Image (cartoon, rainbow, N blue to C red):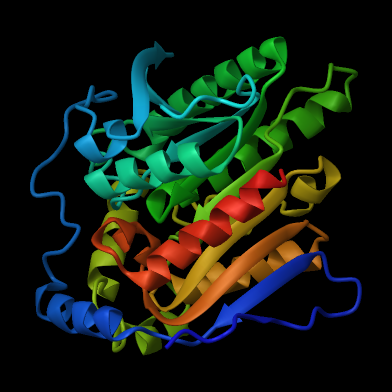
Length: 336
């Protein structure tokens, strides 16, 4: 039976509102039990992806209720989803979505499903699924400058057409959107000191179970591993190493927890997100959320105990928790 979500009492002058849930359905319990024996295989890429951005085939889950068009920006393939329902107004908001997969796998059918749901449920919104370059053939030292060029291009275009931009992603995709925006804000903040024009930035970030610290040094990660039915410490260390390449894992461009978080508040970028109690990435995600609060960043976060990594992506399979989490996310994004 579902329980009423508890909105945590905010600390004095807190800018982050946290909703905490503890319930877990029998179907979710069964799914976690079924996944546990296979956690050394789930999410593994199987083989290395080619250099560059991959052209991918839209999933039927994405095209059932949305029209999908393909374009290329800075040699990166992008897939735009717009609901087939008659629009009430011309779309003036766009969510760029970066799917997770340990920086090594292209968007899954679950990612297409998530993007389709957001395109349907957030009024006046186009959702753009990004097929970004994948490790290990495109590690961060190669991919990050390329992604930064992509980011600059989409933001310039958005400013020209009067479009609000939200960058969203789960797991490694959440890592990328946080890192990109924080690094762009750092560069632009320095440029303002020499009189440059203020550059456009997204109105918000939405990060689901993000990977925020690639050192994997938090001792609570090991404590959480015993409850995680999907991820192991060994696996998240290996994927972090593949993405970092020659960069130190403490580098702010791969570990956004080490960036200047105060810039998000300074430039008015809201940061929303979801964390799950049975996720080895959760301890670092919570630390990142607390840094947002300490630096006065505005945002809403859902923390759901006893849920697994990226549980929201199970919504196509009818899991209640996933549906309610996606509904929550859509409601948050409507306001940005």
